[in-house]
Image (tube, rainbow, N blue to C red; front, side, top):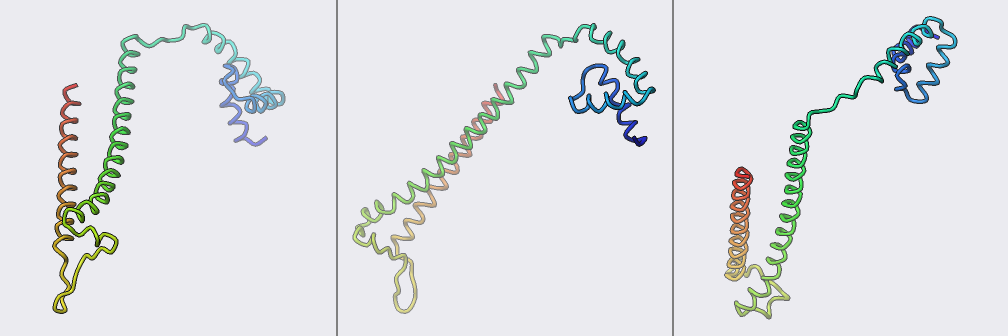
Amino acid sequence: MTMSEHDKIRELLALAAADALTSAEEKQVAEHVRSCIACSNELEAWRPIASELRRLPTPQPASWLVQATLARAEAKLSVQAEHDWNRRVMIVVVAFAWLLTIATWPVFHFVSGRFGTLLEPQFSHTQFGQTWFSHTSISFAAFTALGWIAGGVAAVMLAIRQRGERRLA
């Protein structure tokens, strides 16, 4: 056995005496100890120390420390759950906004009296060789943009309010 392997085994002897090795490591140490007198003696020296250490009482954390740790863990889990909930709500709100935008297109055509052109939407028309966007298309784009801006402002206001409530809690 090379010296580096011998040193690796020597580092495991205290753990072997404390029964803290894996089965593969235990087997490796046992094989080495059979052939190495120095390591065998060192292992025997570690055994009474490990035995006495097992008799010592296991330290218990103070109850206030346990309570404080549990409270911090619960707070962190609560914040994470709230973050996950907010993400899901935001996804649903964005999906709803897109659905509402798409659904208002036929309603807008109906209100503007152009319901018949719904199947063949014309975003622009040509007059005297120039392309002009139709009044209906511009109005619908403005209506959609205004709706998205209002939704964004509402989301920001809700986030600010929620952050303020969290600070008070």
